Length: 285
Length: 294
Ligand SMILES: Nc1ncnc2c1ncn2[C@@H]1O[C@H](COP(=O)(O)OP(=O)(O)O)[C@@H](O)[C@H]1O
Ligand SMILES: [Mg+2]
Image (cartoon, rainbow over all chains, first blue to last red; front, side, top):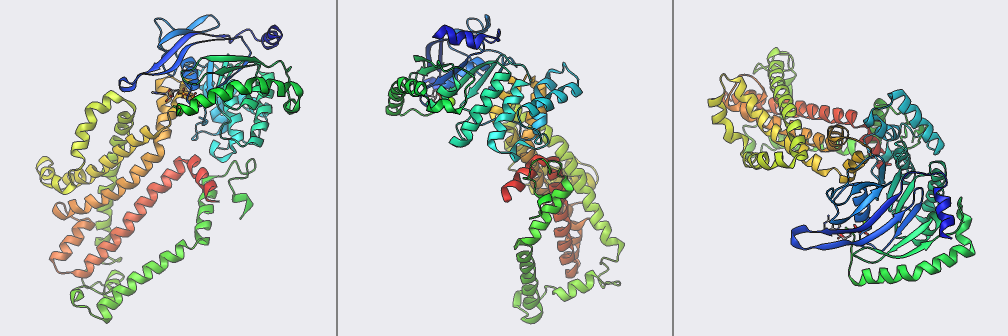
């Protein structure tokens, strides 16, 4: 099974393979060491949608931040396409437009219009002319169904639309990896389901590796090639579930027999870890 | 509500101009009870003033000029005390006060905003400037008067220096808080998208701090007037503070009230101008707020 999925994922994608090896992250605010990630190893092939599922406060964001380069790791290493991001001698990765984060609460710049937000990355890089950048931005917005909102500010449009703008802003830079930190957490379930289909649609058009954190199991199975179910803190993979439902998927998948089987397979582990986290009184960082 | 004015309808109104927005806010303001409550407030104060001085003649109000006397003087072509809207002297006081405010406010903004931005941005910079700053800040303007007169030559510079001081502290402090208020994910996003430190400063730190900067400027212009009047009372020639103080010493009481009301009007106008400039520079915020109001 797993080879089929891997092939499917890597079909057209050659870049964006992430190798997380033995990563440990210990926070040490005023001497009270908190171990957030414990000897965690995950291998993500290029072009895979890899869903990281785990209870609140287990250390998922910590792992994502290490990949993005927002903070250092205590030991271990992370490679992107064989190149060291962080590891021995280089404790902190350098943030870059090959790995772009879509934040938990959204981080579109409220003071820039949607169009200016989307043009931001290439404008900073300064490799293309302004005309070329804005033409590309407009056409990417049109592809994502965002035409007509170019001159709106993010604060003027719905939160679902904002998320789409943010994904397009990331894709403008031709990233190898998109890192999602529970982006749909605050959305209601109806908006969520629309967002999921929209995300898949964008993914089918621009295959990149997706590292997607969630604690919503349904979301995880619907979107992912693979679920990495994390233990409660410190975080390390507890169980890996392959989702052998073929892409492209749409919402009818949710009612399929296979979906329910996978759900049942994953549910017990997730519940068990959530219970542990709850008993430990975990809260998110 | 007029559909064309509504900034929430996406595509068609995405080009809402700032003029349309100002009109929209004005019309919704006129439709709210606020302007009428405001008028009632004004009327109540005027009535109290009129009755206590001119009708009831309350004991402590004996020397107080009544509204009739003040307004007759203020709008008289031949004012008894020599000051009305028809005398050039009146405008000279206003003009000179305004010029001092403009100088001091400009200086305070030009120095305070960059200083605040750097204080908020660089931890090291903050560590050696901020304690000094915090020590100087609580010293009231009046305590600076003697030093200002000793330090600066003439009568004009000490007044401008005093006016500048409090404004400068308010602007710097608010700008710094503005930088600190910026959500970390914005600068992280900028770095992800390939912005270097300077680009992040320009595209995230400055615009992100802007709402606080303008809050600071509102406070700054207010305290500028406050310090100006204090300064003009002890030093300098002309100006509204000087007018109020000399009128008191010359026992020309209606002129005190004229000076005070004028100060209120001019002060309010300058602070409204700061607010309008802020709205103009922060369209994104105006539109967000307009959205929130509906
Ligand atoms: N900057 C920090 N300093 C100290 N502890 C932190 C910090 N960030 C997170 N933590 C702790 O690390 C653990 C994992 O946090 P996080 O990675 O945010 O979890 P998750 O994203 O899975 O909810 C939590 O116990 C949290 O309190
Ligand atoms: Mg988290």
